Image 1 (cartoon, helix red, strand yellow):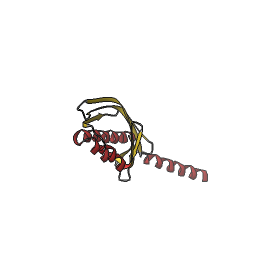
Image 2 (cartoon, one colour):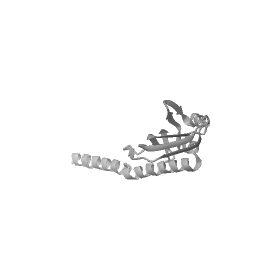
Image 3 (cartoon, one colour):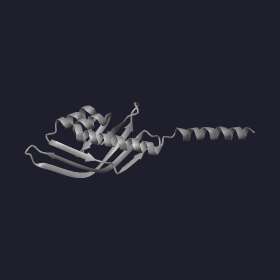
Image 4 (cartoon, one colour):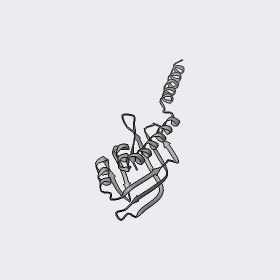
Length: 145
């Protein structure tokens, strides 16, 4: 009888843990939505504004092998840019979330265009990769881009 109660107790504990597990489809939808909001803000208000809005306090951007960490360094990076009419668009092709529901990553195609100081148009395209972390407030912010 003692073993029976132990077995029932273990089943209750494990079933409760499964009930707490976040729904993967819901989390993927959240990340898809935050990526769209991030992209849309970049188009509407500018790349700098969008990156500063969606970066975590200790977030990092990697640009041409240089790492800029934290909002202050990232803002300085954007302030030092001399490009004009910057346009950046992206959309994730792939989204994955951690089992715990607090981390995610995305990747997909991006396009970039801008004018340099001489007015010449610069264009590029490639694949972006972003790592997202759920903040204590429940918001998703990127920690690496």
